[in-house]
Picture 1: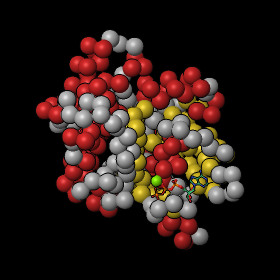
Picture 2: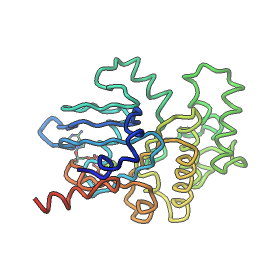
Picture 3: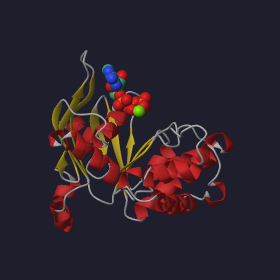
Picture 4: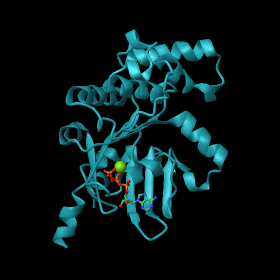
Length: 249
Ligand SMILES: Nc1ncnc2c1ncn2[C@@H]1O[C@H](COP(=O)(O)OP(=O)(O)OP(=O)(O)O)[C@@H](O)[C@H]1O
Ligand SMILES: [Mg+2]
């Protein structure tokens, strides 16, 4: 039994709709690769979770399933209580636009577009006027420490600054859940630390954060760590170590 199940103090917590819930989730690719194999996972609203594990273990698959960029071949994925397998394309787009923010290792910034315009484009789905989008984009860029770079284009920014623009774009719509796939993977130590600080700050502000990281220090600083290996969750700092349990049986 997990610590969470045993802990009476968290009973009330369990009754709320979690941000993410995986029930028996597998993702088998054509050809037979089991990217994920029977994963159960629950992430409460407001948690910050580091997903760790070796290359090819299934980390990005977890994130892509949460982000509804991929679909399970078995089991159920719920995001804020919605069974994503049961949503049509329109509902999926709405969920992605309103509730989810994505940050990737490679920044995916449009070439030649000024930071403020790139971030403002993150609000196109809201239908709000350009002036409002711009104001909110400036706010988001200020928040990530780039108030003095709003008119810069990607080639006029450092790698760390580009990643902060990407984060500003991901959070400008105030998503409840931020998904970051190795956001520091292409950055030097100092820029990487600044990006992780930013994720912690968003977490403190109430955003649920799922971040994949290869960096041991970053992972150690996350309030919760989930370790994936061969498509399975083998350890979760929120519960008794799964591998320790399996080792005993
Ligand atoms: N489209 C696909 N077709 C077949 N196999 C795939 C496909 N996408 C991923 N895989 C396999 O699924 C497994 C999990 O991939 P995933 O991208 O989730 O790993 P990861 O833990 O994110 O690795 P990395 O740290 O290298 O990014 C890998 O073995 C990979 O080769
Ligand atoms: Mg990956």
